[in-house]
Length: 496
View (cartoon, rainbow, N blue to C red):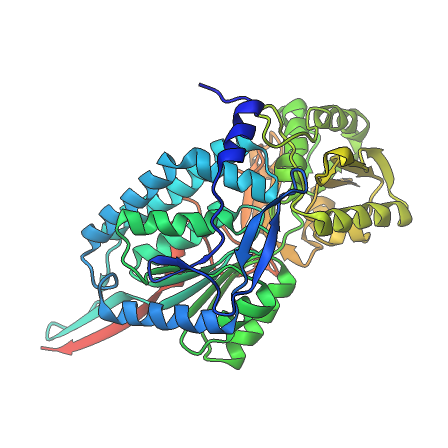
């Protein structure tokens, strides 16, 4: 049965909010007793208080994670047994899907329909897929003389600190947790202070699934307190992060200042969506362009925020995009019919509105949206926005906005399209629309991006690696390549 807006509102009223940290299999307050308010962007109401962890909590969690790792209760557990626990964890995420989706929507404003259809199933699949891979990843035997044996083995790296963003809190957590836990590590998860609730909740589900105490700890709090403490900790072996490029760079500094912990980063993006005149279906391309900027309120690292259109079809194509974007309207995220929810908080609203002002100031032409809306609800909403006449030198074309603001840029030919697309400090994703097979391949090869989608936007699944070139980061989430981040390679050479 499909739930209605009233059904979800009733569920929200009955929901119990857990805001404490999770260490050694139990919820506990921050050592200092400090908390911060968790405010819903849906209507501005307070959801509850969340533990504000700091250095003392980080110390407790790392000591616990290290002790648990060294004990071997998880790190040396037979792979097939770890696999069974991981699959049970995925099943529990699915079983509690409505609760997790509701927490996600109330906490960061995404439409409940997306939380149910994208975030929860994607999170469960990340855990299950990684668990299934445990006993299918083999080590190697080197080519050696007959009287020697060379072994190349992967070993769990140890204690992993995972700092995840506020835009896909549950999904990004599970992209990290899946391979990290499957490899036998102990993990400390630091969710964003803007959306910590699902991370706190799944810690208990992990314990119910059979993940031993101390293997998975959660420390809510601010980046400059507990995040920094984890990044500088001498007994954290690996730091993984998804978020802004600015913070990603700082985490690399912290790693260098401490113990040279492995650092893997998925950072910002300013992804080009290139539409050639010979695109196979301009209507489909227009609808995809609208979705690429409006989905999740544009709070997506791979958002197609630069729409590159071949000049010969610009007059025909842009009105199609404007029309398609009319189908993306902000509304109550608890309404199953809503496809654009609230921005995460008022700070993000001000950021998005400041970029819209910058677009005006730099001479771009506003052709759709551009205003705050639904202010009477107490929530944080902005209209999906399109600027035409954008040059790639403008701020709205160069900086990551993390909101539903689309910059339209024209080009003359494939060479110019690639030049504009690559003229960015980022290199996370790109898309190409063309009927010409050679052009598709040649353009994809020329684009400096970790993911390139042809005649679609945002393709791929758990089998495809995800990550960026340039200042969009290093390392990869998803696929078997993700396991490289959470394991060390060891060469063992035996003289027979």
